[in-house]
Amino acid sequence: MESDLDIRFKEAFDKISKLRKAIAPDIMLKFYAYNKQANFGNKFSFNSGSNVRSAFKFNAWMQLNGMSSEEAKNEYIKLAESVLNQKK
Image (cartoon, helix red, strand yellow):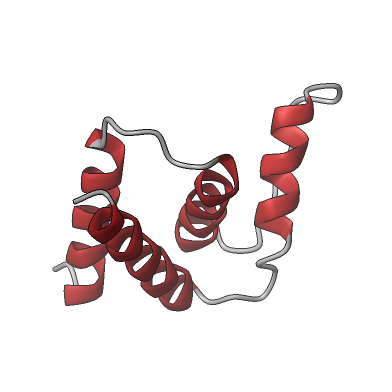
């Protein structure tokens, strides 16, 4: 059974994924990092050696080292609420 936090996290993810307005790249990196940390924790993996975009994404995720899944989900939800409220 999913927790309330899991349900809220999935709802926030779906809303951000469906958003058609542009989000600043630094905010998108935060979304990426919180999502990765929420789903994979500190099990970091890096696939592309020369792709600068991938390096930025990996670095953003690494900065959350040690953050719990619950905290990452809560931070994702807060950021999503902030972005969604600005887009109205």
